[in-house]
Image 1 (cartoon, rainbow, N blue to C red):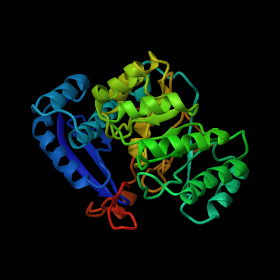
Image 2: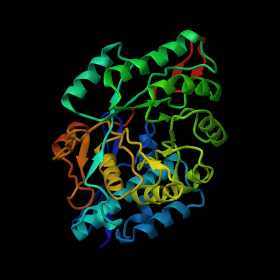
Image 3: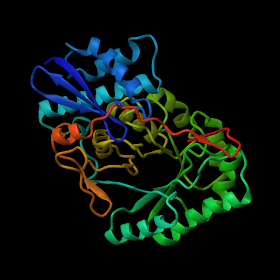
Length: 372
């Protein structure tokens, strides 16, 4: 079996889908994208295709090594994301070829269903409390994540700190103590602000605080972990096991959040998870992307012992022939071959656009740049 063609599709709202074709008629799906840089990643995929066409798609590790190491420059969000989408598609091809789900090829399922968490948009006035209550009545999820921090200065006023804490308190009160609440800092807080907020949020017992400081500042994460009882999570902007190594070896955080469309793909994240397991650290894959990235994440979740909870922003209603179904906060482990999904070509065509979505630029009141 040989690879014959790669096709990319920019689809709304900001995703890039990939189809890898073979001479056996099997087509693999992947999602190689960096939010706000989809067109750049698409170019990287086309460059990879020059070598990839003609290769045997079943030699996944060999192909991964050649793409990652073969062009002298290694890693980075663009190259790793292009590689990630290609790698996802190769596992999809292999699973379809052997008629088994990808997780079966990685050791088999270690659970029967996969815990999901929902997003609560706290920017939308006070309506977010109503959305929590509706979701609880529908038994949609057993865990939620909120992002109460807006554009942030190095230090904030007591009023702004009180506003942030009040939002978390309101969600906790609405949800009760049987529901997990995670708080995403999105790297917007300085280490000094993160220490203040973590201490004030402790009474509300978050499941974790995410990206309390910018990625790469392992020392700040380690220091913060010593000053709070709240588990700390990070990793969505890191690529490959080498960038995760220091976090794992120093046990700077409790939860790692590799993104399967950025970190190197399914098997690379499985390796990261195995490294983390040796330090009793959990894995909660980052996935604010489309249904192909989610499908890849679910395959990883199914076979990973130290999996915690899965992020998502779509269940695939917009592009899949059979969207995922959540029941009581869980998705059943997929059993269909490969990634277990098929794209609806009519929906795909309806969702096409130029791929020119841009990351918003945030500023502070003085006009200076603020972390998004």
